[in-house]
Structure formats: structure tokens, C-alpha cells
Amino acid sequence: MQRIDAGRYHVLVDAGSIERLGALVSESGAAQGVSAYAIVSDSNVAPLYAEPVRAALSDNARRVELFVIPAGEQSKSRLEWSLLTDAMLARGLGRDTLVIALGGGVVGDLAGFVAATFARGIPVVQVPTSLLAMVDSSVGGKTGVDTPAGKNLVGAFHWPSLVVIDPQVLATLPASEWRAGFAEVLKHGAIADAEHFRQAASAASSLPNVALPLLEKLIADSVRIKAAIVASDEREGGARRALNAGHTIAHAIEQASAFSVSHGEAVAIGLVLETEVGERLGITAAGTAEELRYALNALGLPVSCPSSLTLTDVLVATRSDKKSLNGQAQYAFLSRIGAVDTAGGRYSRPASDEEVSRVLQRSRAGSSASI
Image (cartoon, rainbow, N blue to C red; front, top):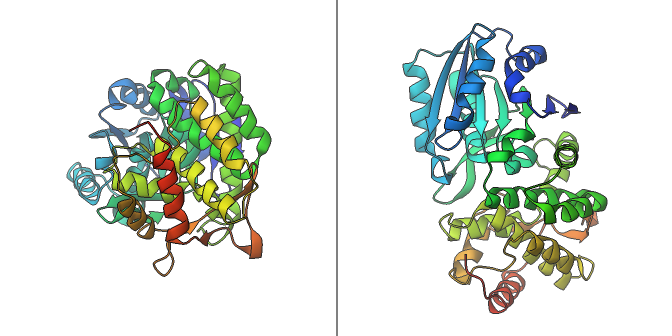
């Protein structure tokens, strides 16, 4: 087992840990004063793992309730938050409830937001079942929902009591989800650790048949990178902005495509295009975008703006991103693989629509792929 100190809580990375979830929750102290568990999952994950998790939690002789939401980004909404909260109240759950978020990023963000707001805040344990959620959304305490104006615009910081990562559950993950998760693994290396980036890029060629010890190491190292950054800047006032590398354009593409482009695909595109902007501005070392493009292409991920999207829609969406300041989109640029630009003590900065538009236009002109 790899046990990672994330400041306010611990992240456990261990094959088979779902079967020991009840004991791990009790040992962590997360279940103290709790008389009921509320498992929140989705229609894809619940048929696979809800019963093993229920059985593991039942060892603690506490009441266990299961809530299943429709799978997909559309469930990360204020409506689903309301329906889920009402369902918990209808079953008589109260402040002595512990939420178990069992699923990918949508489940983790929504269930975390429910926990942050239910009875003015109850504890949550994150049990991510996608690679993307394991290395990204389950760590850091961000919860929330999307709105028509953009992603994650309504939410709260609500730190989990514990994160339990069982790499064995990835055996049921579709190939597209493996690729999406590796986009974030590569991003963590790109912003903080060149060796981690190159290890992940090398392992990508054997997806999804990465040896379990190597997979556990890549997951744990990504979690350590993110946890260390978050611990230094919990509320995204400085260093935590580095984690947004690639995400301004990524979120804009997701929104402009009505989420038909997945988060992992969008992050791959955003990393390459934002790095190209950084190179044009003289912020990023020449050749960095090409190194990213090569690694992400090897994963089978897109690296160009989809031809189905209009540049205007993408640019407008960048300005509605939650990181925008005074109506200007903000970008976390790399200085090179393994480091972000921090000139002037800043971890993000604006770029003109003209510069971003040039890169988007060239990207579309050079792309033969459509998503």
C-alpha cells in the first residue's frame, strides 16, 4: 500500500482496497460519529462495484444506502444535486451520514458538493473508479457542478476525509478512459516532474496492459505531485493554478462542443495548443509543444481543435472560464517539460484573443481529424 499525506487527509493506493473499504474508513477515523453511509454512484459503475462496496461497509454494522445517478457529464448539474439531496432527506439521512463517492470525476464532484452542502456539511470519502478521477478530481477538495455558462462555476472547497484508490478496478475501464486518465498523468509530469512525464509517456505504449506495480507507481506519483501543489495553495491563489495547464482551452472546447469532447481529449488538445501560445509569446521553450504532441498522439488522443467547432465559440468560452479575471481568460503556461512559468511570481497570465485565435486556426487547418 502507498499512503500519501495530502495535508488534511490521506490517499491510499492499493490493489484490492475496495474489498477492505469498511476497515480502511474506520481506521482513518472518518466513520467516527457516523451511523449511516450514503453511497453515491452512477449507472455505469454501480452494477460493477456497488455491492462489493456495500458488503465492505456493512462490516461496520452501520446503515448503508445506495443512490445511483445517470452516467455522464449531464448529471453534474444543479438539478441532479437537488434530486440527490432530496432523495437523501427522503430516506431520513441526517448529519451523522458519511458520503461514499464511488465513481469517476462526475460522481466525485457531485457527491462532494452534496456532502459540502447537506446539513451544512458532512464528511465524504472518495473512491475513484476511473484513472482520471484517481489522479485528478478525487484529490484537492474541489467539488461542484456545471452550469450553462461553463464548467464548475458553482461549487465549494470540501476536503475528503479519505481517498481510497484501487487500481484493480481499472480492468473494466474502456480504452478511451485509459487514454483520458493518462492525459492528466502526463500533465502532472509536464508541470512538475520531467522524469514522471517520460515514464508515463513510455508506459502509454502498453495501455491498457501496464504492469500493476508500474501503474500503482504512476498513480501514486501523480497524486503526490497534485497533493503537494494543493497543500501549498489550497484555494488556488497561486501555485495551484499550475494544475490548470491546458485547462482553459480544454474547458472551452468541452463547453463549445456541448461536452461531446471528453475531458481527457480536451485536456490533450488544450495542453498542446496552450503550449504553442506560450512558445509564440516567448514564455515556453521551443519544442515543448512538439514533445507534448508526440506523447499525446502516441496515446491516440487528439491534439487539434475539432473542425466542427467555431473559433468564436471557443474563444467566448475561454472568457467564461472560472479562472478568468476582469473578463480575460487566464493561462498556466509551461516554461518547459517539468516546470511551469512563474515569472513575476505569477502562475497564470492572460493571452490576447488574437494570439489564441492564430493557434486555434492553425490547429484546425492542420488537422484531418474530427471528434
